[in-house]
Image (cartoon, rainbow, N blue to C red; front, top):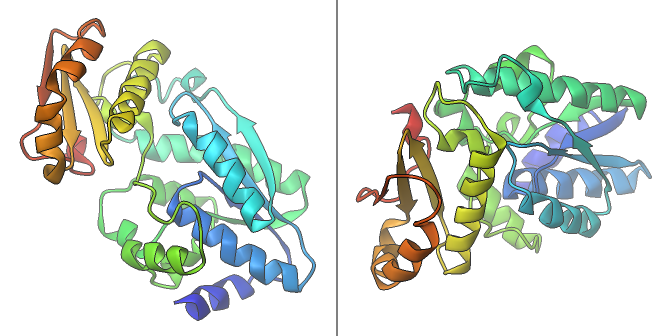
Length: 263
């Protein structure tokens, strides 16, 4: 797997490389191997994180740590994507519009730092699920070495563990807009409540969770194997969320499922 990924990255070793970096396991593995290739050639690698209303803030601390572990130059692009009228009401093509908007800014950064190539952490599995943002990435000429090397999510985690990355077992995350039904207005106050609620549940010991919003209903998704923990912590959870403003707070008996807003 390592050799496959290294081979893909070496195709672009003649120029500067900038990586869209979240601190998640996919982009962290990509950054690690890219930095190892670059170190042999004495080249700089830029790891750039988007700081936006739709990205969880705890990404920043984690991403900075991993970038330092890998030896990359870490930068933050602070962008208010909610100023984009195409995104304000969480349209069905939100992921496409958002990727096009954010990666357009990242392309500007890459040009300013003489980077000819821009990488992202899309893996092989991402190509088989609903990911409209991949079309935007393709249109902008962004390169996805993990997907090009046909490396799956399971292989990403295995290789990240082998390389000693601190985020090898980090739970998958996604943009906060995926927690709201299509057509709902993306308001900073609502997004902040969702983020704070998920952090609270993580602190209680839940590894994979989502708070999904359907009008006046908040639906909590936790991993099926942690349902018993949810029952054990029910009073604490109820007391925390009672003043969040939703009339009904439910737990999804199907458990955590990625992309349930697209069903």
